[in-house]
Amino acid sequence: MRLLALALLVLLAGRPARAQAALKAGDPETTVQNIYRGLFAGITLPTETKDSAMRVIRNENNVQLALDGRAPGSWGRRIALNRGRDSALRTLLRSDADRKAFDANSERLRPHGSTPQ
Image (cartoon, rainbow, N blue to C red; front, side, top):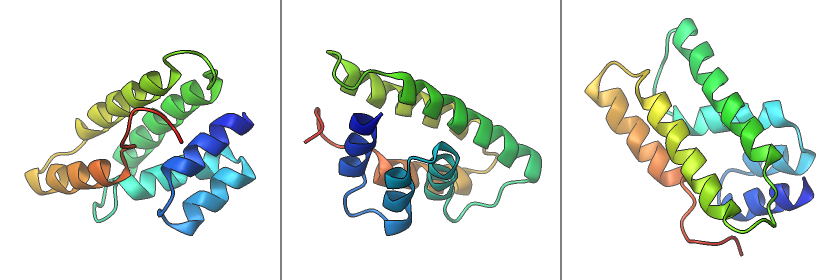
């Protein structure tokens, strides 16, 4: 669990301090909320759609928390999980403008590189 938190902190280097603080605290729900805020920045969702998005993020986060960060291929698995999550979330959006904003947010938050430092 500490290795996962450390890897995520590395990913969030240069990201808002609030997201880093949530990971340090190890609070999964706060992490989920911060991921939602980052991915949907500038996008307003109806309550039902927001609830669906939070479920998708929460489920993906739970899978990531269960991964063994030391296992071969775990970094690639995390990146694939993020892509799958973002693809599922994108289907919730109804306008081209929202999809464009989401894509930009997703790219900004996406881990770049093949391995954690």
